[in-house]
Amino acid sequence: MSPFNDLPRRPHEKGDAWVIGPGGERYWGTYGAAGLLVWHRTLGVLLQHRVAWSHYGGTWGLPGGARKENESAVDAAFREANEEAGVPGDLLRVMSSSVSDRGVWTYTTVVVEALEVFTPVIGDAESEALAWVAIADVDALPLHPGFAASWPALRAQLA
Image (cartoon, rainbow, N blue to C red):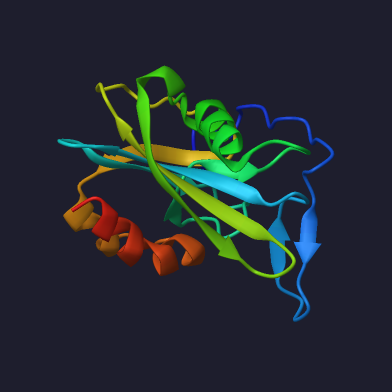
């Protein structure tokens, strides 16, 4: 059991619900979801180890989550990364974004460069750990399936 499990869970908002795909697959976020891939030139990428009770718990992925109604994907990615990992938006430069469209739901990955070193801080009960991981070491981790599928293309952007 993580020492962080006593952290509060954020209250659910209107967009915090499952979307069910035609084959029964589940996606979190009525209005879609977004995540932030934070890259630092010397530290690597910031990853979140998801707590066991979460969807795909025990895997590593990006800080992120459900978009709010009328919230842009970039704003959602920045907000979620700040809430979950204490990522300071004012120290980031947006490099790109990409959308995975599942027909009934979308996930947007926003790729940013951290312009200064910062220490990520677990901000809620959804994270087991946060870590800067060298790009070459990411593939050795048990990755969230969605992140694993998008990682090769994302990694190429960071080369």
